[in-house]
Structure formats: structure tokens, C-alpha cells
Length: 166
Image 1: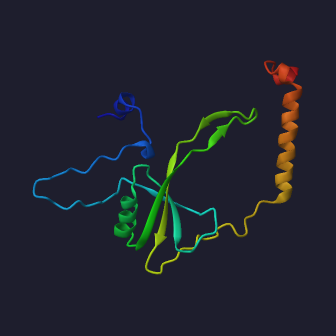
Image 2 (image 1 turned 120 degrees about the vertical axis):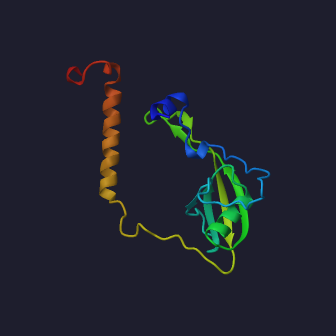
Image 3 (image 1 turned 60 degrees about the vertical axis):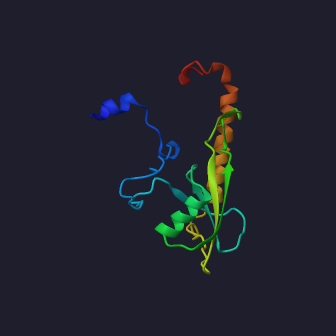
């Protein structure tokens, strides 16, 4: 099948929006289910609040349950898990850059809070120790933004004219 035919036949669906196909109820010979490349995904994120070192937060596939998260970590990564809590989070609002009203909303996502067992701890590495933004550059950038907004407000009625006529 040609690539053009696939793309024109159906629109492309991103991975996080695809549904996970169910396991077959019975397969002849009753073989074990083996996972070579799991269809679920998990992304580790840094906890916003100070928490004990044995707690880890993941953004997970929306169809994953608590048992799926636990089995994913225990069977694939061999990590002992004591407790898993999941919650749905609402996506952030995307605002218009200059007007400030809501254009759209990002997709909702699912968060899993995992408590590690067997005395394991995890500390998120601090990658950006020496790479802090320079305050002078930030102030200059803010001044340029204010200057650009003032120029736009001054000439808003002439937006249809080319810039050399303004």
C-alpha cells in the first residue's frame, strides 16, 4: 500500500489519542501474553511540592489503570511498588498572545503518583545548576515586548497599510 494512499485514506491520529486494542479473551493453545513493545507510555515529571523521596509522579497514557501502572513498573523495570494513585488533570488554557482571551484548551491528561517499595528512593536530578537565565537579558526582553505593544497600539488603525507608509 502506498504512503499517499494511507495518508489520504485516513487522517493521522497521534499516539496519545489512539485507543489500546483489548487483549484476546482466548487464543488457541492458551499461550502467555508477552509484551515486546508496550503500547502504553509513561513520562516521569518532577513533583511540584516537597514530598518524601520514595514518591514519584508520572504522566501516563489516559487508558492506563492503577494495575497497569504497577505491572508496567514491576515487570518491565523490576521496581517494587507499594501504592499507586491516579488522577485526571484538566489541560491548560491557551491564551491569545496579545488580546488575552482563551483560544483553545490543551488535552486533559492522567497523572499517576507512585510510592516505591523495598526502601528505594528517587531524587530528581538537578540538570540546570549553572544555566540560570541572566537578569539583564530578561529585563531587556520585557522592555522590547512593551515597546512593540506600544508601537502596535499607536498604529492599530493603519494595520492594512504596508510598513513603509505608516
